[in-house]
Image 1 (cartoon, one colour):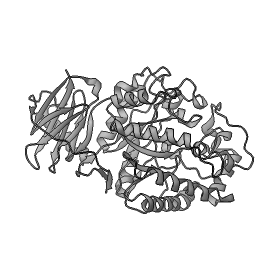
Image 2 (image 1 turned 135 degrees about the horizontal axis):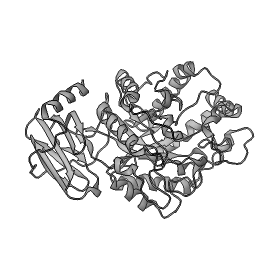
Image 3 (image 1 turned 90 degrees about the vertical axis):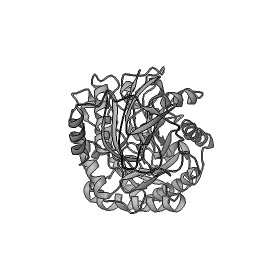
Image 4 (image 1 turned 45 degrees about the vertical axis):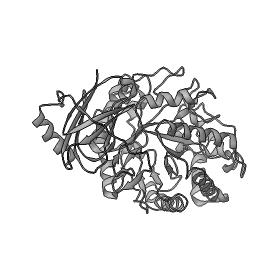
Length: 458
């Protein structure tokens, strides 16, 4: 329906919506930042506005010591300032259980303080955060990351030199590790729940933290994948959702699926119980990861996740999508994802943003180089979107950015605009506007009015 309305409206307007009259200026007071919550398929703020989450993963460099997305211990401010300049509003922030609890019951407070500082620094710049327990092929001795080495029966030294790490899920020792986790062999799953209790308690009152992702790309071990997803994984999320609801009522639970599901675009996972679920699968085009041609039909690839979110009546955040940094189609691939998310009403966090000379398992997907130089991907990422909308989107187009929506509610809408854009030319029909650093505020002329805004750099 949303796409049909957009097509009709744009056909009647003669294209992408440029040429609007100069916007009338007015005094607008933005609502104070408050909590976010799930409202059916929407994420809304305290003012009842529909919030769009657009951001990046604080990524691959976080998978090994010192478990931060940059190598310079003094690099936090520069890292976050750069992210904020892109106009994004959320970071998915991986944390390592191995780093947090390197020995049973022995918590590394230095690492946890660094993690806290990243979350706090993000919120100081207006960025929401998602606390993400990140694992790949279980643990560092198995060419992965995430789970502590002490949960393995005979761990070897950590490794991050495995170019084929994603193929290791079929290794017998990796499968055995996951089988042991799901069965709570040796109490590893019990320890995992205790770890999460501690993490939720630590962050439940932390401003800007909107929720928790219990596990990145869970794996089935030797179980039948679909049956495991329908039963074991669904029950796991039921358990974790109850834990989150008990210890941080209202916080969102971001629900990921198997890693291969992010390529196939399907899952047998059932809707977990609870009122604060966000479906958070990944979507990867193999061509984007291996230097082949990329699939131009990104909307078609994301539609199954949008449809599943609608069936579950929950929001959908594409937790990861990405492309190798030197891929010739990188910028258009990112643009197609943003266009598809606009069209389908999805949230998303791009993989990934690290500033590091050393790569994890030779994986080079960061949108900046080791010296902080931005790749061409950033030019696509840094674009306007409806950060908080008092109304319902009818259409969004770009070049110039133009949004059409039907106003609903008394609060002003907030359109994110990358601060780096500088002076703006703003056109408007049905509303007046005010500029703030990194945003255009919009007040509709009347309830139910059709509002049309265009924004471009002068």
